Image (cartoon, rainbow, N blue to C red):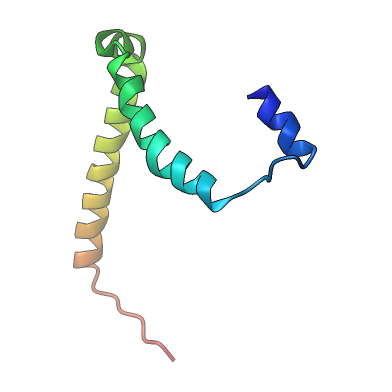
Length: 84
């Protein structure tokens, strides 16, 4: 990787190429994501991020409740403003 960095900065190889985006973004990245997930330990991840996941779930439920309350309040609001 360091060699490719040096070669691209010295203009021996180009910075950007359509082949790079097709091969790297089209083939290598979609293959790398499942391979990284196969190596992960989900029990360890849930154990280490437990409080953060609980906080995120609470924020989502509070947000859903608040948006439902705002929707019912706006439905019963009888004041209408006219546009001039």
